[in-house]
Image: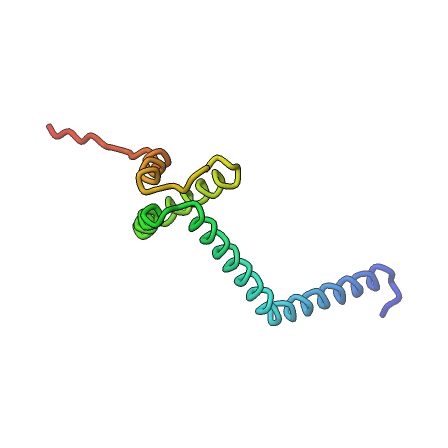
Length: 120
């Protein structure tokens, strides 16, 4: 170029940036395998979670939890995490039956907000 060190440095930076952009573009087009690996890992984690729940919950308790999951998926997910945490910490000796699941759901249920509307 003109021989100016600043111009040469600027040209080097431009080339590096263009190479980074090319690498990113290639990574995005080849990123499908990475997404597939993440999906497989997520499915494996869900299968492991289901297996542990089957181990620690009776059929009635699992049905109750599935019914809750249909109406309140976020709440059911937090209950599942709580049950798994209790199981991993060794605080569950026997399997949780339906009555115990009802009690657990009541304990973990978020406080309901009630509004008193008075008309005059």
